[in-house]
Length: 177
Image 1 (cartoon, rainbow, N blue to C red):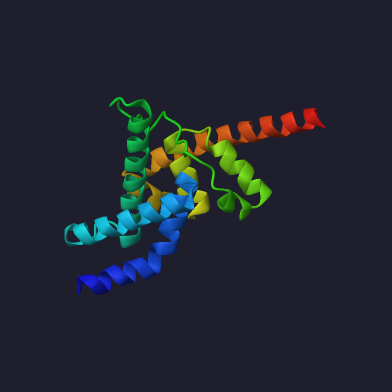
Image 2 (cartoon, rainbow, N blue to C red):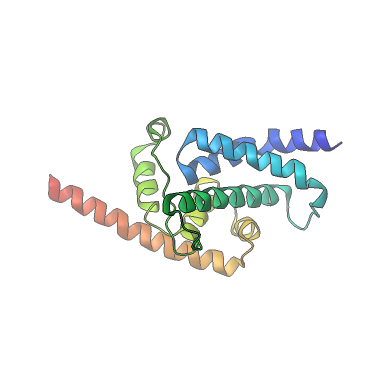
């Protein structure tokens, strides 16, 4: 029983979860490792899934938590300190840019992702979930355990900041020409 549920979840959502993690960490091999961790956690905790949210939002919540754990561990290793990682204010900076990941994207998407790295972790999550994963505001709120109002506010601020950053990039390129 448990195995068939696991296979159904894996078959149905693996690509979306993997893509979500790739957009967050920008490294395919790290995203593969994190994806495996997501499904390990799914296996360990499915009995506790109460159906208060959809399986999809539950799965993405686990993926989000796995990504947060990854960034926290990376931050601790980098600083050798145990200061709290402030998810709302800190930027998520992947250790490396995976060339094959960026080669697959069109120029506009690459520019948006580059600008997105200058946004806060909260803003990155919302933009990736809403526009790259095409999740609804309600699904995003459920995954992040926020109100829909908070998702809308963060999304609005992120879009405003992305517009400013992309505008600055465009102006800088025009001055170079």
